[in-house]
Image 1 (cartoon, rainbow, N blue to C red):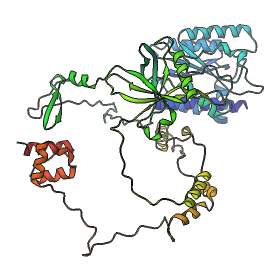
Image 2 (image 1 turned 60 degrees about the vertical axis):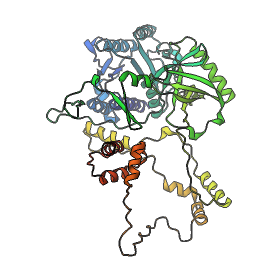
Image 3 (image 1 turned 30 degrees about the vertical axis):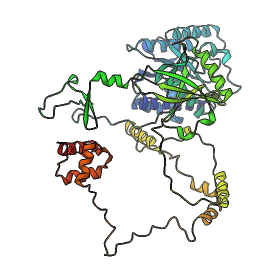
Image 4 (image 1 turned 180 degrees about the vertical axis):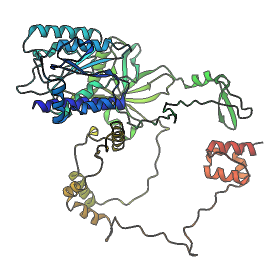
Length: 558
């Protein structure tokens, strides 16, 4: 049991290292063991404290050194290198304080995670308990956040014996602070570490206006951001140093370098070029100060799924900006949940951002069995489409299904239902990319295999459906239908040739000149504009629509 818990802690440390390398490689990370027989720390001032890694950026070598502590050989290496001795958490905290003070850089935030399965580490020694509490208080005064990552032990883990006075209180209302329930599985501990490790940064801070003179401060957060593979870094081939690209703008006729003050912007409207200065462009973009202005409230059934036009964001009160924001925000959230309504508002997220209509949809707080927050309390900002964004679709007329076919499909849907959680599916492309990078960085023989969790489980689906799929196919498709058969070859024309070529697109010269005169060339498609340029012998260098229009205007507009 003891070896399994140690293996769990080492695995979590490795996960933190690898995630930092990928997402926040500039963060500084240290690994310190306390309660060891051997001592290794700056100036060897503290007994039974072993600094395995100094505070520095994580790298491939550190991951390899942590891997060396895994398994039976790792346990033997740890016993030979560090051993087991007396426990003094106060000395370990003091050593960590020295690690922080030796760093000359300015750190944005400092966090210390304690991994342990002992709820009374000093065995009732009041002197050591008092020393640890004093040092923990000193660390918290210097801005260090101390979190407890405790594991299950026989008889349960009682945080009230010692650790309740050691752990830092929640940094803000969105944090849960001390978790009284210990982690039983590796996944639970990794989830808890990840929740503490990720720093919550607001996309924007703005005011939520409920009427004349009634404003509260809120922060806007992105709850889901599409994960992308990092972009390739260009290096100088001889030294492998990163290179930086720089763009410059030159005059097309003289070739002279243009300064930013010499550049203006223009828009063509009705064959007339409208030239704008930079301050005029900025004033045209500004519609107001950043703000959420509530117009009123609507029943939730008025909000439709097809109103989704871009990813939603989440707002939470900022008590430090305006006192009383949390209280009023909580009251508004509670009433919206009770009445099952959403708030309709005008949203300007940042300065010079265009205004959007948005729906503030209330969300209750949700906790899992381990008392870890699954969803926080607040409002989801759902961006609504304008009338210009809504499209009228000309849907094709198809034969409607019979009631028997509908009932059979209902049976199929019922059989294939499952509990969906988006966080249970990882992007296989990104995971494979990082596995390959990890294998190259750690000199591994081959990358670890990744499971593509979005592949359909065909055998399980066939087992659930049974003969339902065959019955539905016989109801809907014609006899002898085979979805695996190859499509029939294309018919040849009467003269034995292949498919009929599309006729060339040509526009009469009179019609083209009328388009030029009326300023409606933009209504023509790119192939038509290309054919027109070729018809009048115009040499074109680009294929963009505006370039073709400019070339035709220069030729026919004179």
